Length: 171
Image (cartoon, rainbow, N blue to C red):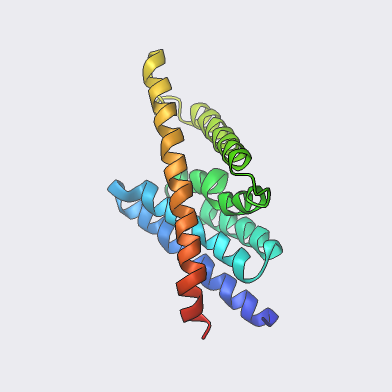
């Protein structure tokens, strides 16, 4: 692929990422869904162009998101977890040991969750009003299950892209 085609393709993926994140701002009931959808475009860039462009895409998209998305919680969520997850997933899945992969993915997710919690508690202390030990534990357990479902859906989308969408796009 020529350099101009790579840049154009990356720009298109960046536009789709921004569109999903603006939809996350506009649709209050689907914020997490659209934010999660925005994360697949970095993996598509990596599949088509390579990991170097994937890192550049992540940096550019994170800067744009932080500058342009009016809801900073969505921008932070994208930057700290969803935007980089496609890159991390790619590195982890090179191991080819399913249990180690799951453990490393959960470690990354929990590290991201911890960082997001610390940032939110520092800047939005009144928004995080969770009391008692059991609600936090149940919320954490539900987040683990939700993450595993997200990772599985992410994998299914990448297979769909590789087997169907990619072939239709690049005929």
